[in-house]
Amino acid sequence: MLLRGDMSPSLEDYLEAVLDLKSGDFGGVRTTDIASRLGVSKASVNQAMASLAERGLIQQERYGPVMLTEPGLRYAKTVRNRHSTIRRFLIFTLGVSESTAEADACKIEHVLSQETMDALVEFVEGRRNSDG
Image 1 (cartoon, rainbow, N blue to C red):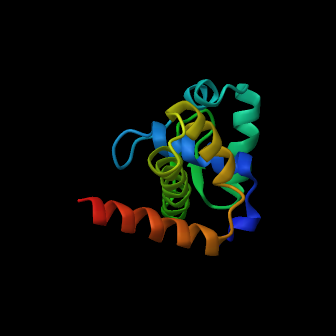
Image 2: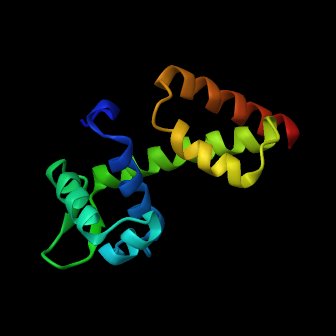
Image 3: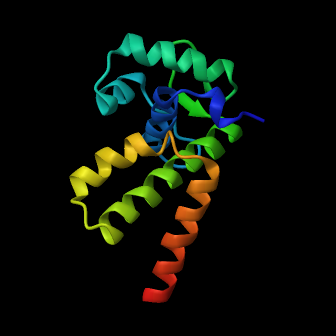
């Protein structure tokens, strides 16, 4: 089982980008699309993909599309959920603008402890349920 401490914020961002860009359940993602999404070079993407492949989170044939493995999909969804929960909290609870909330959520998602993240999820979900 891969632990959060085993992944850098940068690698988590790459994994989240693959999830966001993939099409369908089995869709692959081109490295050029990842580079464009994150504003980085193809060389940086290739280096990150090699690191994610070593961790068993993606599969990629030489020059082929990037595909998430099952563990990669689970990890990427965890990162995305942390991001969206923090973003919702910043916008709907604190009244932060959407653009600021997006930028801040991207930074915060990587450094919160699991305990704090669990409490934040409980707070945001509880609030959403009481509003509906």
